[in-house]
Image: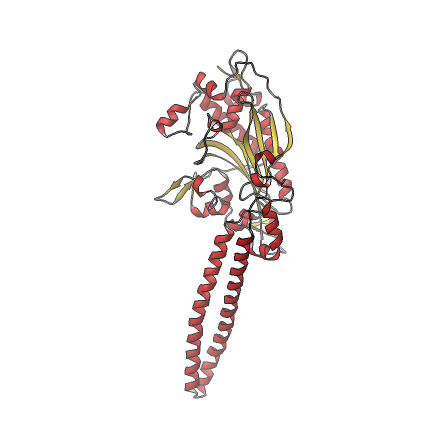
Length: 424
């Protein structure tokens, strides 16, 4: 979340920049400033009363020694009165602080100056693109038909076991999944990321720490009895490793990678864009996370984007990178680049990765800080990206690499992981 001090010192700038995200912050910020004024007034009253209590308490002993019992008793009564007054003022302070915090949680992160103006996906800016654009035969199949033809994925069985959006992978479909996970993890390790294996459920504090709560509460699966949430991405548990931690400046940047199953309710999703693997409630993903120094976090972001580009290139897929406009960005992001691969059979682009810099927004919620020898602890910057999400990668691989003889060719870089060159 944004810091109170930054809002107080840059009120109009905050309102102006949030307008790029199509968020009208004026009312919320004016309320925060009003509550902060009340909080500071209550604090001043508490401090003044405490000073008087201390002075009176010191004088009581002297008055008793001098035999001025009535004056001493009057001072005692005054001390009791001041303490009662302070209880009310302290309660007011606490209420104001809680209200400020609750409003701060509802205000999005500020977009970076380089974020384009725009209200929806059509306004995103194409940064660069590449990869071989496939030219398929007239009878080319979409991935859901290829999956059925070779018995790779059983969508109906998933409906029987759980419901729509929970497919069952079989045979070479399962092996392809496992191959991609290991391929992505090995590449991340070679790029200097430390692999961690996180829990798949998190507590409420973790959800608040990375900004899933309260913004995306309705999109997460919730275990009511234990008050735990199924993770929508490994970003949540991995970033929360550093909650309430003060790092040494020399440790930065910290680079982690993790595989996990991901769970998303995707409430409100329907239509042709959810067919097959295009949108699932459970899917596999490899995530990369960085805890970075504020001075270098945008260099880190560029490195992460370049790294994800190497993955789609190795998979021989046509790709493009989009700089998201203000209206299409997430609640917590300061700058996001989306990767899309082209689905030749569906004749459309599919998002397979988002790489984002959250600056200090998550770190302030997490209290994730670093310290150098000369300075007080400062907030870190946090970044993450999909590297990569499997469903739409699998969809594009099946569609784009289908051959005239009906088989599907596996990209050369993936063959050592699959153990086969063709799906047939």
